Amino acid sequence: MAKICCFSPPLPPLHLHNQLQRNRPKSDTRKTYASFNREKLTETPQILKIAVSGVTELLRLFSSSPQTSVVKNGDSNIDEFKASSVDDVLRIIKSDYDNAYFVTGNFTSSIYAENCLFEDPTIKFRGRELYARNLKLLVPFFDCASIRLQKIEKDVDSDTNFVLASWKLRTNIKLPWRPLISIDGRTFYELNGDFKIVRHVERWNVSALEAILQIFTFEFENSGG
Image (cartoon, rainbow, N blue to C red; front, side, top):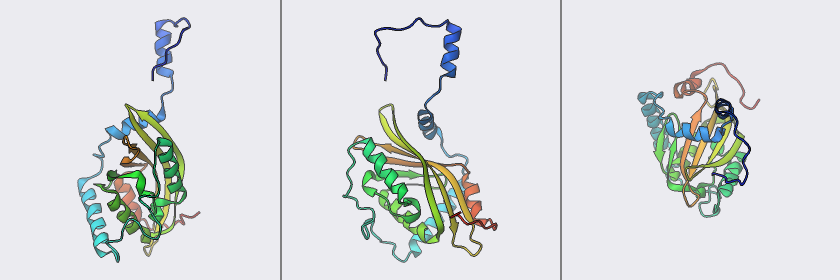
């Protein structure tokens, strides 16, 4: 937002002014916001996306409780939390990370719009209930799992409020060779005017193919260390 001042010091010569403008630090959050909107994930082979979607559907079909509701045993209470500001959303997201929501499947669904868009380098879909079911499908395969919040911040760009979280995921997978999945990532949460999350977009420090190939790595490492 522009600021109006009653007094301005003399401007430096033009060449020095341009140099200062180039050297002025930019907001990492704003640059990240722009990069999230530009990235189209074209680096992920379409066949890999189809394979991940297919495996997800198979897991859902063969799940022992495919019709499990989002609300179960007090988890993900849709009507319990009402966010009335970006600060409320940030606080709730931070609490979900503190509770390791990604590796437990328990998150505060009330801060998400029903048709929220969820996207990572391997899959893209809409619907908070579908997201909740997908998380629950993954939980039984995790062993010694942890997701640690590294940084969380809020910002606004072009009247769009958003929250950006950086995190580290470490988990062994319950396969005979117990491979380690190790991903550093960022999640972008875009909010609408009612402070509901309408976009939940992940970016990883590895490609989708590299992430999948970690499953077939036979070198064991305990993720809890």
